[in-house]
Length: 68
Image (cartoon, rainbow, N blue to C red; front, side, top):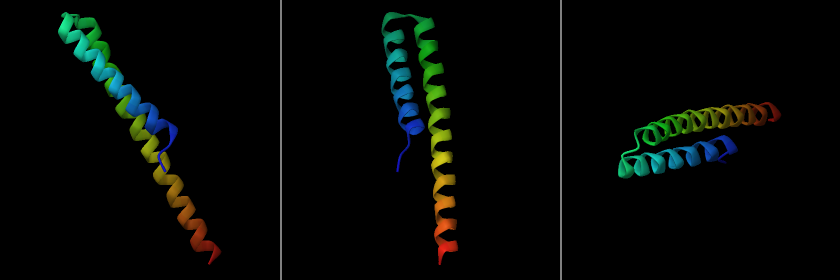
């Protein structure tokens, strides 16, 4: 199941891509750079969320095996 970090990370990536597009259209290099940073931060946050989910799933699997 997808977690909050994964969702928030995806949202930041989309926000970053949008800022980049607006920055390109308006020749606003600062806005474009902010978009690049937002997209990168979103990617990291999503990665952390995926890692957290994988660890949680592994712990659940171990718990199930111990119960047997």
